[in-house]
Length: 257
Length: 255
Image (tube, rainbow over all chains, first blue to last red; front, side):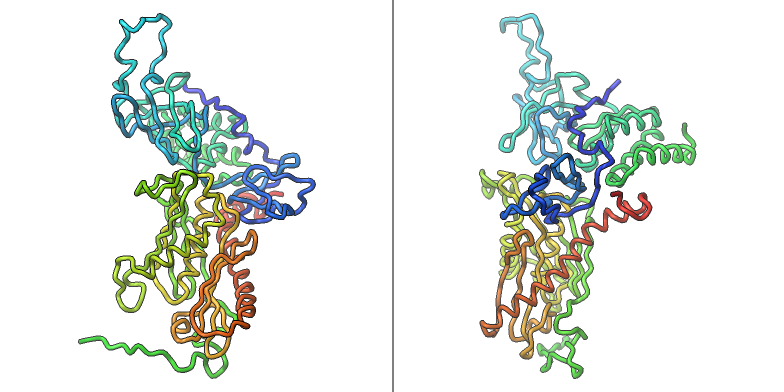
């Protein structure tokens, strides 16, 4: 059913496990060799340009000649193209307002909730549903895609597209946003493992919310515990192997298969 | 029966063996305990025990500004709420924020602002709530130290941490980290804070009698103490993650 082929480019940061993974904190000097290294993500040059310092609490990673810091804590910043789970908190005849776990509410306009029909009706036979906010009600959970977002304006959403739309069943849980790439794993390895072992449908979105639905409550509980464990141990090595072991053990303990 | 407590301080602030009343040397700090990530519902949080001071700090943000007219269209704002609990001092403190609390909130805001990138978050606010549960001298320094830690725990991009300590003069001798009694009965008191990315002074207040020529000695002493506290801050931030790492990597971080 729901496939989770999220853009893998977004998650390159967590892919390679062979690089250095030192824990750094804000203000820590990463290197004083500014000739061979350049400041990458989460870093900055100091005023004299002789040191590269970290801006976040995170893990140091060197890619080619860039020094990056992969954050362990942080907040979600919407970007165009992200898939997010939204909760409708308010609506009026013109638009819905949605909570997407960012600093602003997002806007969903009714024209972005209907597929455009190929036959042109020339206005006269226009369906009234296209322009009014009757499709969803307050409290609905939607899987949406961001079509525009910047620093100043409210992000705009759409529900037209593959796997997008309202979810009336399942459970939504939220975890720390920077740990989402770890739940997906290297080219989706972790999420495949979770799906196969717990027989649940999962949809992971970039704003830190995860939709899941399993055969029964026992499987869903097991999956939630597993995701919480991934969140807690996101900065350790060899997590995928440890998770499969953990789920197998828990299955025996809880008596489910 | 009325409780009679005389508002008096000891005449001598040094014991006969040359140590301070609580048994410290001239340059010795009170014992410090730091912890991060203790409040679940805050975006970032920290707890500090510094001698008898007990302080919580919680950070929320970036989020919408209320009341809305305070929001700035070109940059975000940092708001600090320093509050003392009614039971934090000897005589019950009235819970309404007074002149002193508003002033300390303001100086902590000004002290922390240089390390943040507020221009990246226009129209939003970062809020720091500092609750003093127990006060015994030097709470403004302790609050600044713990607030910086909570901001780092929230994952807000920062140029560096901020550390703060007070230096003072009691009975003609220069000492580091004044306690409540020393603060009130001593001669001079100079709280100062440092931002580590450029090693600049971010907070400097002064109260009492002192020779201006002594200022250099004061600041030199302060810097040694600040370095000591900075190490503790770094350890507190890292230890939360390193304990989990060590559990699974066989006691060593993978190189």
